[in-house]
Length: 269
Ligand SMILES: NC(=O)c1ccc[n+]([C@@H]2O[C@H](COP(=O)([O-])OP(=O)(O)OC[C@H]3O[C@@H](n4cnc5c(N)ncnc54)[C@H](OP(=O)(O)O)[C@@H]3O)[C@@H](O)[C@H]2O)c1
Image (cartoon, rainbow, N blue to C red; front, top):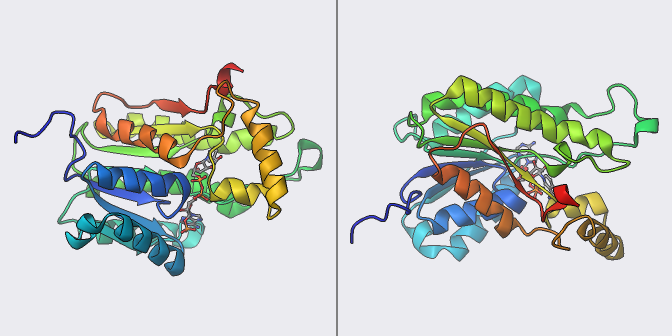
């Protein structure tokens, strides 16, 4: 059968930093379903083995064909960041013998920030800033040498709908998503013809959302109810919905410097 012109991810090599849970894990699933060879990374070995085992159980054919891989890479410490990213890129490409086609970046920790009145200088944890700002820049610095050149290749980072529409009372969160979206646009210019874009999710039902709500299931339900109300679609997004934006950005060789919004229409409400 001739290859379909829309079957663009088949046999492509996709590295997913932050692919062990939430949106990144769903993007790993979507990439495997689209025929890609998938490499996920994690900061901890138990989270990595759990995610690899879930992927291999869901996709036994890809697992048997050795198309699902994973490596450790902690992205939160300034001192080790560059060396860790380099080691990951070496591993993900078998020492640069199998170049990457796409990189997606969904790594983040839970941003615990007070309201404006209680904010102090240095309130934002260094790891939070490194994960959202420095790590994307270091990836932009190192990754192109490990990627196939040209517009078919892409890097996709993750911002947030709050970067475009701040949430009242949590306005300072805006800067975190906006910083990553800014890095994506800057790198789109510097790394062309490799494409660089960002996805800006609204609220998505992931581990990060559950961590923000806290351990009480009632608090989580109330939190979700509140978040639904700020969307046109009256819903919280699902990881498998938002993953489609990353797949799109990998496939469209004509898009770069873009921020794709998938947020239930919250920007219009
Ligand atoms: N969920 C939402 O409502 C929402 C809304 C707007 C924007 N976003 C953004 O979407 C992105 C993905 O969020 P998510 O909800 O899918 O979160 P998630 O389920 O908590 O996933 C976060 C990922 O980051 C990785 N990570 C955490 N610390 C790391 C470290 N030190 N080094 C390397 N990787 C690390 C985690 O892997 P390990 O723990 O295995 O290392 C995990 O794979 C984030 O940028 C988030 O800000 C989410």
